[in-house]
Length: 400
Image (cartoon, rainbow, N blue to C red; front, side, top):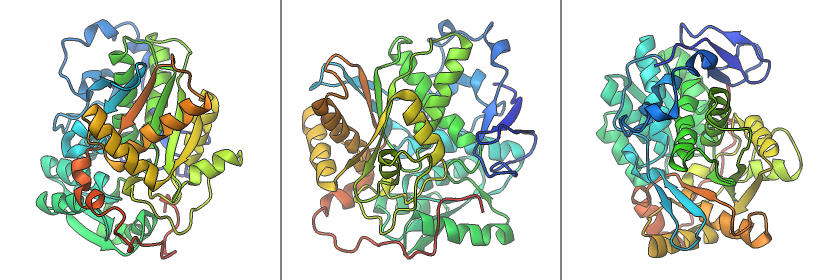
């Protein structure tokens, strides 16, 4: 495990000590990144040391915080070669504990919360992050306080109840959940583990980038297509690529990073098309893909910068396209994807059809969760009329 040199603000570059819990930069609210002594690690931590290690995200322990892991076996998910497209790979995150990629970030966040001596953790969630926090908090002996939209997929609510979490169902969106949590956290003594509101969920998610490189024999693909609500996975993978280059494992080449959103909630796509450096709040967000119903991500400036630096793009997909892709993936690939993950396939079809990706380009599509978490949502698609619009009591998933 690695000693953290500092926490670095991604806006102003300020360095903050990591010896006590931190949220965001106290000066400008910027997202904080954990920094390690990679030059010192370079001499002793090499890819040849990995094959005999445990098949979990903690195989990359030298670039993860120095604390005893709270682990349920998360990470090192399969990289499946597509049966339909010869140069496409599917990274199936639905095989993580609690059925989604959220397990990675919450494993790291809960690990550090326990190391810091925190006892009460709180989160606003569209569903899967709530399940992951509830599970890892239970494993760590900590309390979890969860704010979820009332129409959250049934599996998420049942999971959280089973893990013993304290649940508040909200008539609104994740932004409304975030506001209500923020209003209570100081009086209740909760530590907020919202997306990029603390430094360590990024650390867990960045292991997806290490795995993509390792599973493709240390040659990065030409493209990565990623469903982006809060976008922490996209941010984390980009951080991983920078670290791997500094370690000497890869060169300066980078994949084209593609953020996929629903046309019913596409603030990153709108900002990208308008060449903005930050997004605007998306009113009346409405989509079957609960994890993409994020009206404004706190780390939007990082996502948009990554898309620009990588030569990538942002794509909006309709709910009809999402559901068609979900069923197609299941029937052709044998992968029962979450709606958010299925959006990756729909995006690839659009981008390959437009020539953005050539047939010979290696492209990794992320399925971020298991369709088993969405049985009620998938079964009732086309029948629902009660998806809530924002009540406008919330803002962004912000620093307050």
